[in-house]
Image (cartoon, rainbow, N blue to C red; front, side):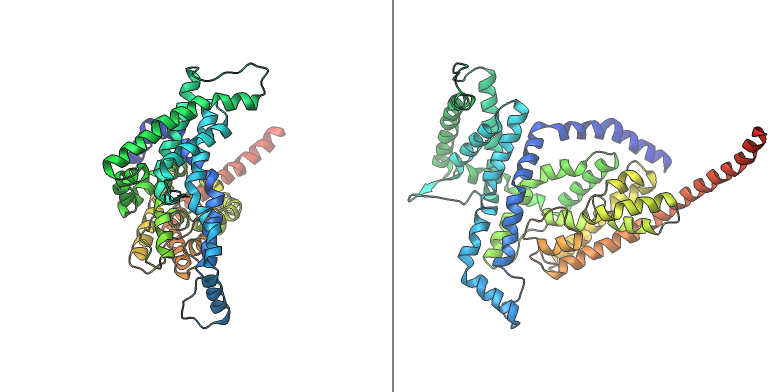
Length: 444
């Protein structure tokens, strides 16, 4: 076992860590992650509005409060939908600006100007006008991949033109804001003269505008992302990177976010139509079944540490429980420690993978409600699981079962580690007891 562990650590240090480090620092992955983070507040509030529009009660209920809520939501559904449509329904607009601003900072450009340029590039190809009205069809999850591509293209084209000095430069006496407006004129023209003809060409050739064509190309990837093997691979990658001390969740979520958002939009559209929700593996699933207390589902371990016989582990448990309730577990990861600790390698890897499998089949069989809302990742597990599924009870129960499963799997490894620490504490006390008389004798 020791030889296997040494080889595994060597593989991580020599191969996986450098690759993950380069991937995590890759500017487009950073920009996509920053874009989603910038849009997150709008999407969370928009998702929360679904609770008011679709109350978590049976349509046949006769309970007075529930009946009044259902009737109110039905009567004013159009008015209640407006905040949702102007937040979740416009997610790609926020993401475009966020990605553009992030790439602008990396390329030494003005974030506001670049963000607006990226917004124009996206709307140029994804906002067809019919009978004087702009279609919002691709402003939600259906246009997510188009938003990523157009934002990267527009910001990089702007950076390229500026590096080559293909800009309009005004005298130094001109105010900075005015000079910047003229500086971006040529990039705006280049974006229009490239993207608009491309969109028209694709539409005349295929009958689809650019967002439709892109979605048709990535549809197999979107479908594959919502599968048990894809989920287990994502979890395994995240856990291995974190075990090596690398923030694997940032890398994995940066890659998975576009797929999660596309699938979340499909689930919300199905809910609005009164149909069964089609997708399982979304961010709410990741956060509230697989990362309960943080990566590795360490909240149950934090509670176990509180009753440990080892003083060191008890102190770590006291420090880690409260942050763990909000899915922050660095005190546990680096204090116990779990990172690069061979004793905790197996449970740290297997706990979220086993819970992922259990939760997947529970949702797939219809025993647990599926995710329909976006929630803050800091929401405590059972509460967040229920919130993400429009306040259904079954997800909260599933989250508690995952916590119990994690506790059972961590317990024997914790006891083994505890025995090692207790032996070390006893040896240290014996050494102190032996050295004390000798120090006294020497003093005399």
